[in-house]
Length: 399
Image (tube, rainbow, N blue to C red; front, side, top):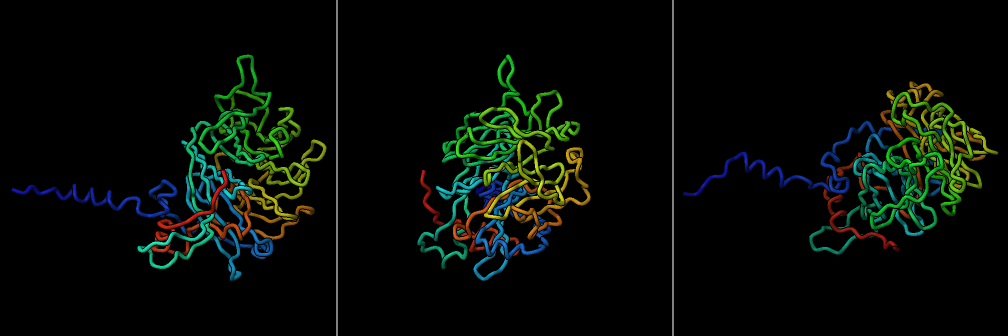
């Protein structure tokens, strides 16, 4: 007599068979990747925002960490605004290896990941794909590296031809290899004790890299240069004007008086930085911070294109309101602002009313990439997307 399989087992096996069928779920390692509140991508623009991107010929890449979104903003060949996306867990640092043509994105969950994205360049010739996918030159994940969660990777930077990261969890800078290894290469003097450097826990919130031509010519921002029992992440951790910028060569602070500094950059022979707790962006002159503008939100994310700098602002997380003594949390906005480097004047902005946190901002030429594969206003689980991921070619990467 033939045995009948119980219906509950059939249903279970059928459900398993349907799982992980959507490309967005595969690239993000995340079954809920297709489920996104559409309000997160609603935006308002001010000034010459889209004209600036069009005239500059760039695609702007933005990580929105708490919404688990990597965004790309540009103006397409028909002069239409384009906003594309990819979901990944808590994206933070973002940098571009311009010599090899690779975009690196840090995903700061446990374990940490580094996503390597490269542009699609046509598709494979297939008998089982009808027509060519409508997406070309979009950034696709070529590989990802898993790293221990205790590294607590924040920002990424190219120094020379090597990739570096802030290992906030170790109060140190690490060099990352394509094989997935990481090596501690720098730390400030303030963590050294008679028992050795304190690598075992975050004490400084060492969170950004102003990359120089070499590691020794670089600078790093941190919330403090004092190791104490009260650590970053504790709501009572003291921050007001205790932030610093370390010199790699001396391993000592060269700038003091900042409040939760982020996104330090080396540009036009100056060190620039976001003074986040006061919503400021500015540069260092003779060891002092000189603000060029105060913006409506927690400043984080900073990138330069010629005479324009793109600065991110975020809302203030309620549990960390004490970290923003110079801000009115009710007025804080999630957005990107294009400023004139010389005058600090705001030339244009994009604001997401339902957005929360910006972490990194970086650009690539629009000729290099038109953005990311997923659009909120299209069917991101449709046949064209599936065909793209089924048969894509990518640019050759020189190792």
